Amino acid sequence: MTTTELGRALRRWRDRVAPETAGLPAGGQRRAAGLRREELALLAGISVDYVTRLEQGRAVNPSGQIVEALARALRLTGDERTYLFRLAGLVPPGPDTVPAYITPSVQRLLDRLVDTPVGVSDAAMTLLMANPMYAALMGDPSGWRGFERNGVWRNFLGAPTRVRHTPDERRAFEIGMVAELRATASRYPADRQLRRLIAELRAGSERFAELWDAGVVGRLEASRKTIEHPQVGPLTLDCDLLRVEGNDLHILVYSAEPGTEAAEKLELLSVLGTQSLVG
Image 1 (cartoon, rainbow, N blue to C red):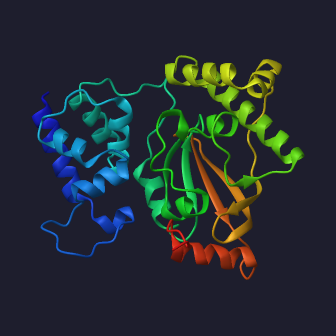
Image 2 (tube, rainbow, N blue to C red):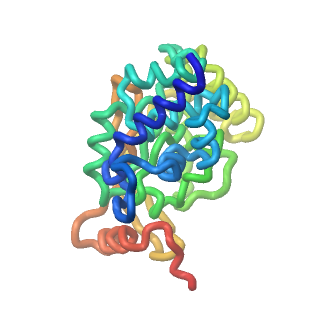
C-alpha cells in the first residue's frame, strides 16, 4: 500500500460526495460535483494543505484520529473505512477501542435534522461531529483539538461552557458524566486513549478524582438545559440523549416547544449561525 494509492482513494471518495449532502452550499463554479479540498478539510477539521499533501502523496503516516475524521467527512462505509486505515498503514480500531464510526444510516438521520442542534459523541463523550445549528448554539467546536473535544474534560478541566446549572443540577450532571465514563471504561479496558483521558482528569480535577474514587455508577440522563447564548440570551431547551447501541454512539439533540420564546430564539440562531451580532 502506498501513499499514492491513499491519495487516489481520497480523491475518488471526495469526488462522489455532493456538498449539499454534507450540509455545505453547492453554489459557485465547480469543476466537479464533489467536495473541494477546502470543504473536506473543513468537515474533517484538518488543514487544506494537509489534505493536499495526502492526495499528492507528500504526507505519510496520518494518525488514526485524522483517518477517522476523513472517513466520517467522506461518509465511508465500514469496509471503505477499514480500507482507508490500511492504506494509511494503520490497523483499524478493534473491539477493544471506543468506536468512533458514524454509520451511513446514522449520518442520513443527522442530515434530516438540519434545523435542530445535534452533536454526536462516542461512548467516552468525545465529540465526533456537530451540525451547524449545534455550533451556533453551543459555540463552534471546529477548533477543538485532542481532549478539548471531550465533554467530561471540558466540564472538569476546560473553559466554562454556555450551559448554566443550579448547584444541584451541576452535582447531578457531574455524577452522571463520571458514572457514564466509568461504564465506558469497563467495556473498553484496553483503550489507551481512554486510560490517558481518565488519568489526566484524575490528576487535574479534585472533584473528578473524588467522584471516580467513590465508585459512582449509573448513566447520564436526558434533561432540560439552560444555555446562555452571547447574542440571543438564555434559552431553556429539552436535551435528549439518544443511544446507538450497536455502534456505542451518543446523539445529543436540543429542541424547544413550538411557539415558545426558546423556539423563536432557535429560529433566529438558524439565521445567524456562528456569526457575531457585534459590528
